[in-house]
Structures are given as structure tokens and as C-alpha cells.
Image (cartoon, rainbow, N blue to C red):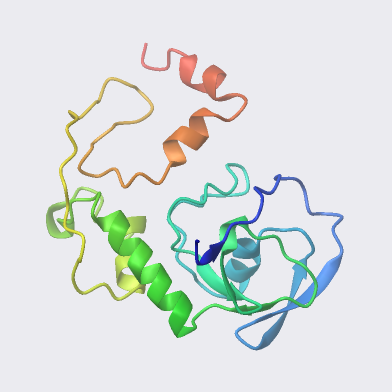
Amino acid sequence: MSLIETPTRPTIKSHRDAAKVNISIDRHTVAAKEGELLVEAILREKEIPHICYHSRLMGPIQTCDTCLVEVDGKLVRSCGTKVISAMQVVRDSKHAQDARAAAYDVILGNHMLYCTVCDNNNEDCRVHNTALALNVQHQEHHFKPKPYEVDMSNPFYRYDPSQCILCGQCVQACRLPDAEVRTDRHWHQ
């Protein structure tokens, strides 16, 4: 049995006309839109790690568990939980912090940490910034090389297995309705 509540995958739609509701985030009353993703409401108020969640356009992938919070006493993914009136959210409980750290440690087993020599070490690396936010001092799950070669053949992205954390964003982006149209253009010519 999983400790994490897995709600049904929410459909992404506009919340412009959604009713405003009050929720509690870390004992502070916050206005939110009913039905919006909880991660969005939290991010308007405070930072929270969210490795696999990119935006409302791609929707919740729910693969990384770095956005775990407690809602009404249960551990949930904030990227996959819709806001409802009067929900009680605890972002930094010991239980949520420990669960986020454990989930992130598993992610780090897929990523070679060599930040000091990495080309992406420009303060805009989500992996590095999340390690800082979660105060990662060492890894329990050490990096395991993947048996794949670096692939630079696509003009839109590169695949470096030592950098891939298996978050699912590339797969989700390719599943978007117009992804084939966007990636089939011959921009490189």
C-alpha cells in the first residue's frame, strides 16, 4: 500500500472563471481558485520543489514526488491534487520534508552530479537548485550509468543519459497535440 494518495489525473483547463476559495498553507489563509492544481497555489505564495511539473500546459506528470505536501493529514503530490475549499496544506512538515528528500535521492541515482564542471551550472538548473533547496548533503542512491549513447541528432533537444533524471517531461511534451507539427519542421535547414 502506498503512503502517497494518488488522485485521478486532473484535466487541465482554464480556471479564469473558477470560484475563489480559501485554503490554508502552513497555517496562513490563502485565496486560490477551486479546481486549480495545488502546486500552482503554493508557488504563488512560497517555493516548493517540483522537478517533473513544468506548467499547466504540460500538466502534472506525477513522477518525481518532490512536490509532496500534507493535505488534511495525508501525503499528496501537489502537482496532482486539485484545490478545494478549506483544505489544510502543510508544506514543510517533517513527514513531507523526509518524503521529498527520499524521492529526490532516488532521482539523483539517475543523474551524474558534477555541478562544478557542468555546462548548465548557471543557477538555472532545476536539479542543482532542488538539491540546494532540499539541503542534500550526500546521496544514498549513487549514480548508475545508463547503457545509452549521447544523442545529438535532433535539432530541438539533446539526450545525454548521464543528465537524464527520468522525470518524463520530454515524453509528456512529445504527447502534446501539436508536438508532431512543432518537431517535424526543418528548422535546421
